[in-house]
Length: 147
Image (cartoon, rainbow, N blue to C red; front, side):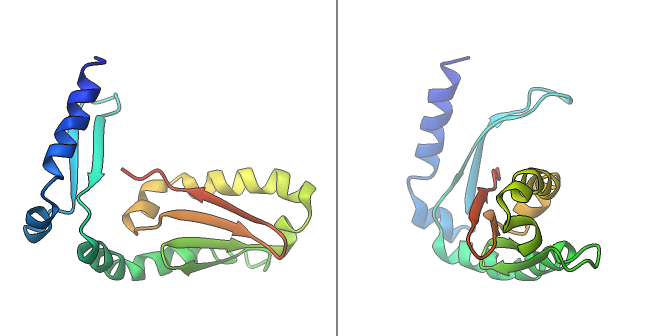
């Protein structure tokens, strides 16, 4: 099993070596691995080929999806305590009510992060790269683990 990891890494390096050709063919990402079964997680190494134009186009194409997600997160209960907006590929969540006070922040932030990360794949498909929680004195970045 341990010899599989170096071979998988070497294969990804080999496949992404000629980025110009790969980008020209419309291949932006490479996944190398296998499925362990229906109830098991996949063993996959995923890598970007490095097509900057393609990535920029994908980010532009998914801007509407990011905005829809931010609108769904923005003031979901109508209390005015939670606000969300998009900043590039970052979902920015602000709340003076929850984040200004360190004690309130300590119990509100983990639950809020867990709630948002529950559907992490949806955030990834919209090309979000992180969630940023902030108020006037506090900023916490939570990177997304997209495959």
